[in-house]
Image (cartoon, rainbow, N blue to C red; front, side, top):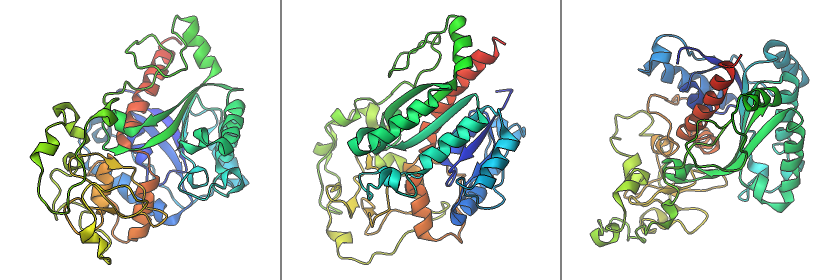
Amino acid sequence: MKNKIDIISLFSGGGFLDLGFMNQGFQVNAAVEFHEAFVNSYNHGVKTFVKKSQKDIYKSGLITHANIPEPLDATKPEVQHNLIHDFHGISGIIGGPPCQDFSIGGKNLGIEGDRGKLIFTYRDIVQQIQPMFIFFENVAGLYRTKTHQNEFFNLKNELEKEYTLWYEIINALDYGIPQDRSRLALVGFRKDVVKKLIDNDYKLITEPYDGHHDDLVFKWPTKKFANAKKVKWPKQWEFRSGINNEDIKSIPEFYKPLLVQSAFIGLDSSSSNQNEFFNPYSAKFTKIFEGDTSRKSFKRLHRYRYSPTVAYGNNEVHLHPTEARRLSVREALRIQSVPDNYVLPSEITLTDKFKLISNGVPTKKAELIAKEIRRTIENYLALK
């Protein structure tokens, strides 16, 4: 990667999505986040990541950390005015508006909720800045739930006035991230970009596509672990009962990277953010079986399975497979595929840290999608 691609990030949270794009040579020129603790986490975590990274794009200074100077509310007209003035025509806008109002685990307020309205804040900023491409992520409920579908299609119809769109429910598990996390992903390219590519014999396929063809305008990353849920995973084990060798014989070697045990390799007390977890307070910490994830809260992960969706809001508690405690901050970050050189600052509360982690886009998934977006942009620029 010799050239950077300039973008802005909306509803940036802790920057997990941004890291994935940065790793593919996208320069985040501005990030917009309202919650002060998240702003501090973004600045500390992304700065640490860039400083410690051994990738050439960071060591050479091609891609740098853009500090968020203060919390910004993207719904405010003055904030939008400044973004439009400073970044009109920028290459891309990425972001995932807070999704609790569309989540089946939330209050289902939809567009009536303060957070639900933010999908149209995203739309308004896109329409006024008119970037070359957009990336949007939200909970699957925005697309799958009947009460919310109309809002998604209203958003889609508005964006399609200027953009050709690809959208799909994508499970992070399919891409080697050790959690069952399905989310709505949407990618759009401005219609003049798509027309130029089609005029030069690139093919337009907007439905899901798992091929390897390089002559497509855009395609989603190829799924590597698409059949993970069909594997005969181990059943529940009594807490601290040891390893049932018979139970794990059915796991093909190919699927071992999806194990929680694999995600936690190398972690010890010296690992950043590893000693940060809520102290046990209930007898449930020693009674719940390993792999019992059937209830809404107090789910104990299994060493030899993938994790349920990383989500720690609404009093949801995920327990360590073999220790009588909740997951640590670093363990949760690992399950979200966030690199170890991204470090959250000590002064941020545990509540804010886990909320930030729950809301984030898995970095590895973001990077795979960013790679495909970059391919499209490079093909387009080569034609100019």
